[in-house]
Length: 202
Length: 151
Image 1 (cartoon, rainbow over the protein chains, first blue to last red):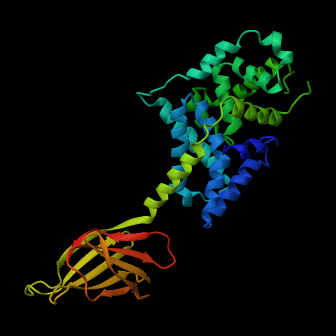
Image 2 (image 1 turned 120 degrees about the vertical axis):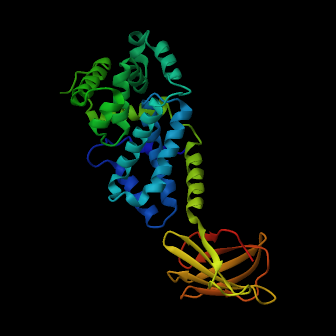
Image 3 (image 1 turned 60 degrees about the horizontal axis):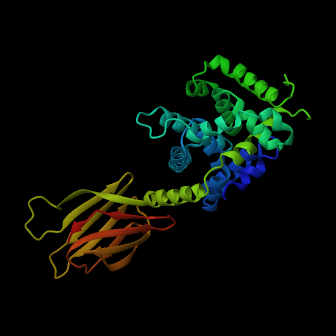
């Protein structure tokens, strides 16, 4: 499995000193300086995040894989146009989001509705309360996530994986007015905490 | 249940999504193969035939011909003298760059020579047929090929 690094990084909170973007910068700079293994490291490190960004746009498995691939090929083509290597993670997630959006809007999509996720939704909506105590924390969180509205789920997933998403593009992608994204994000997080039995942290 | 900060919550959310909808195994390898292929294509530049004309208007039949190839900032001029038993090729690369050049005729390598730092090279005895040149410049990855030309 190639996504180990990114998963491990997640144990540290992502804030201003985000280890993922810092690690991405390091690999990207090495690659541009002529070390071919840098691109391998970068692909292993960031692909999981790109995958989740694509999936958050309701893309099917194959479509999401295509988006991840075309995002990387775009980086290869444009590697010299990225002035500040610290922005490479943001560049990648932004490119993946635009490409996902383009695919999601394109006509004749083979797989417009996210089949598996919908199936799971149906399975898990019942009996959540009764078994909550016995569930592992991760499973509890997952059920809470699935109990969110689709819009909240997508927004939170993108914010979780995309590096500082800009609200103007998110607005277009999710059909939420740009001024509402901040409040929507807050509402979605509060709803999630409520589902987890926590008080919202304001 | 202790309160968690937004950052902690997002970290746990990422773990949750990684567990419940993980990136397919093999995607990373597919991407790396695609990148490798793209780089090969990148490194393979074909010099397009710009012109293939007799060197001097009005000169009789056996005069050397001048063949010009170019791509973006690179120009290759070939003077092909076919008056002897075998064709002779004199080449100039502009801007001047050193390296090595291989002459292929009818799909097989027939000769290899050095390109001087002044960008000059020559094949004194080339073979007849459909030819192309494969150029590797010093200090550069990849290679450049000309389109086919007749000798």
